[in-house]
Amino acid sequence: MGTITVNRLSAFVCVLFVLSQQLTVVRGADSTLLLYASVGPRLLQYQVDADSATLVERGSITLPGYVQEAWAHPSKPVLYVAWSNGGALYAPPQNGTARPPTASGITAFRIDATTGALQTHGESAALRARPIYITCDASCRHLLAAYPNPSGITVHNVRDDGTLGEEVIQPERLDLGIYAHQVRVSPSNTIVIVPTRGNEATAEKPEDPGALKLFRYRDGVLSNLVSIAPVGGIGFRSRHVDFHPMRPWLYLALEAQNKLEMYRWIDSETLAPAPSFVVDTLMTQAKPEARQLTSSVHVHPNGGVVYVANRATGTRDVGGRAMFAGGENSIAVFSIDGQTGEPRRIQNIDTHGIQPRTFAIDPSGRMLVVANQTSMLVGHDATVKTVPTNLAVFRIGTAGRLTFVRIYQVGSGRDPLLWVGIIVRRSPT
Image 1 (cartoon, one colour):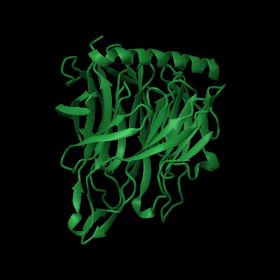
Image 2 (image 1 turned 90 degrees about the horizontal axis):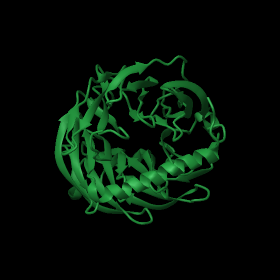
Image 3 (image 1 turned 135 degrees about the vertical axis):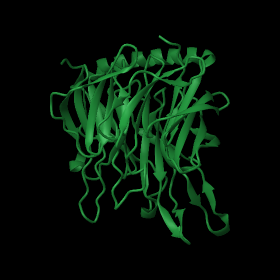
Image 4 (image 1 turned 180 degrees about the vertical axis):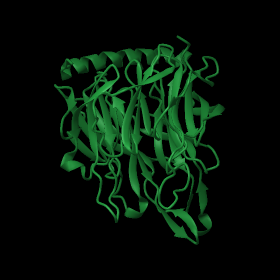
């Protein structure tokens, strides 16, 4: 397999970015934005007005299990949805053990060009375990799925019509670490990155190390490349990455450390073994009772800003009721130095909800929507109120700063809001 230098890779990605920006301008007046959000097994559909920062619910479908993640085909009106009927979020753990799934899969849906409604498109792909993330490669010839327990990855063929085909059998035993939490394909389409989170220490066992696992990738086939695990992966709870759209920079959110790191691509088309920059995502140091963690990370389409979600989920017992123990549920906003890639935190804004697991940016970069996963009691004495599971809408300003607009309550609070995504409605191809 040939290699691509950083300069060639940067130029190639820059061309793609310019083309995407041109497409965004064309879409602005004539295209419809669609938002999909999962509440337990239901996938809700909304029409989006980025000018007024509003959502209008248009319908929903129900999957065989909780929706875990989804990914849109880059050129066809198809949405791939991963689901499972097991895991700690699906049912209360029994004897400290999460309920194992009896069925997990990925279902392809065709997006109606007129209404945005979803119709099943081909046969679902049965999966061997609960998926935690899915993604397409550059042209979506293949769909990749990551699994946390046991840590794993599978690659699935995608047919020319967008339906799912058979799994691609991997010829090599892959080094997949402990608790894969995401899978992404590099902008060059030749490297696959799997952040493996590890696990926190318990009274019974020490901490499991985390790592960034890199694999060579060609025609759906993976081979081990390198494992990046500073200090042996201890204190390196790598969760999610995102790529800069123009420069050879990768941004990584460390979950339990509440950090954002920036890594550079190097000539051999791998990542530098250590980050160039490490910054805090929180306004103040986390208190243990808050159970403070990061979650998703997204770079703005123009490459000038990177966003990270902070989650606080700790509770305290008040008269037999579980109350929010405090902490920061926010989106941290970082400006990106155009020469060095250094992220500088310029804002932390409250998400007006609890546990923002995912968030989405509209393709034109004007609007950000947060999926606040959990409903929880908040307050003291007579001021106690229920903060509902909700979608929180923000405007994105010219410098990337966020302004809160409104929330939309979703569900009854019993089912978690695990995923949200915004796509442009496309005509059939």
